[in-house]
Length: 477
Ligand SMILES: Cc1cc2nc3c(=O)[nH]c(=O)nc-3n(C[C@H](O)[C@H](O)[C@H](O)COP(=O)(O)OP(=O)(O)OC[C@H]3O[C@@H](n4cnc5c(N)ncnc54)[C@H](O)[C@@H]3O)c2cc1C
Image 1 (cartoon, helix red, strand yellow):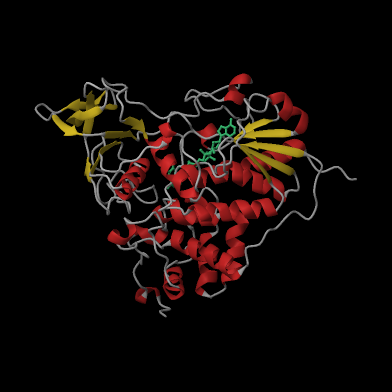
Image 2 (cartoon, helix red, strand yellow; image 1 turned 135 degrees about the horizontal axis):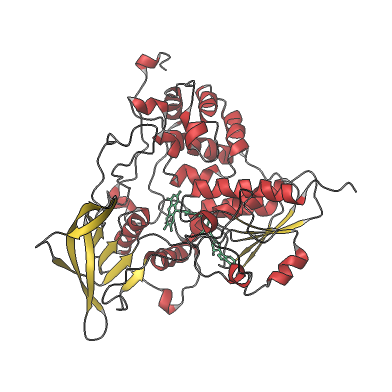
């Protein structure tokens, strides 16, 4: 193996399974590097004086250069310990994080970044494989109980940390299974649902109680929570999708992305689907409106379900292939991202807006009326303007709206307590994650708005620290 940086290898990606093979199933598409390849990649990490991956980019403050050094030296168990020191669940981000760390890897100033996310996957999966990841219940239990509402990454990270502090933690989840968007949103081909279940089992073995099928604020009241718990943490996520209020919006066949993705994930985990939930793209002409990650998840799902054809439209122009001058390192690179789903099929178009949905006499969606736009600057803001003569129609049976989220929306508990919202509609919290009601905290997408798993994990961890400080030290018995 090379020891001189001049001789170092290039960035190596593990790649994906063959397209034809992976379109026939819903299993994870990304491969994993071999141990030797991983060590070679770790060697590309330069132990830079100021590692921007760690202090600047990673919301969890993962200690990346030192972890990579341990990999280089084949000290995997120590690498695992160091990773788990900052990161509660590396197996999730190792699969689905956009890897903010890689965007600011010092090596990427004039080369390709280190494959940090892939190395994280190798460490944690080796940890599970070797039996190094075990239930670690707290040495001592405290007397106080804490309720976490919502079991997405923010709720899980908070529950994990509070449990490690010795509190008795109950997680309430309104779905039938815990995991939030890790389970019901992100497709199985990116994050296998058995990976989520494996972690939940471990958390249960560590003493965390999960009560599923419970809508807090509706099935259980605040008075009930107040009697039983010293603090309540709300991590209900963003539930309100951005709509497209144009003519024909109410036609049968115009749906939001989440019910579409959720239906497929429910099939995979064997949960029952009500007839109105049982949506599929099989034999349909599909248009996905929204060019982001959720749209790309819908694309991969529609292709696997056997859609006849799939388009993905984005109103913004296509981003550049490489960083532009006003987007220098170490900022997150605003470049065109090609997901595994984009490599599987479908047609992407940019700078396209939809003006009207047209249906048949029975109220079923038949076609979309669209046009191209160009972006013009007015009063310092960018606006889309229709390109004359660019109108076109697309025959469609299923239009999937994947245009982001507008905050938590109505929430039974927050609304009954009339918790203050910020000007985006998120739950307003102070620097300690506390709402305007003492003892009620909020974290994750519910408080910060639509974001990433890694930020939800970091928020959950921080909120747990603030809750522990709010409750104070354990009383001596
Ligand atoms: C389709 C899709 C794909 C994504 N892909 C990625 C990706 O690849 N990488 C990435 O980093 N991020 C991704 N994201 C974003 C990421 O999933 C979220 O930022 C993250 O899950 C937010 O975590 P959270 O814990 O705040 O909320 P959520 O994961 O939304 O969890 C909230 C949970 O609270 C429950 N809940 C709500 N109200 C109540 C109540 N009253 N009582 C009980 N339970 C309640 C909900 O049922 C849900 O289970 C994706 C998002 C979507 C929609």
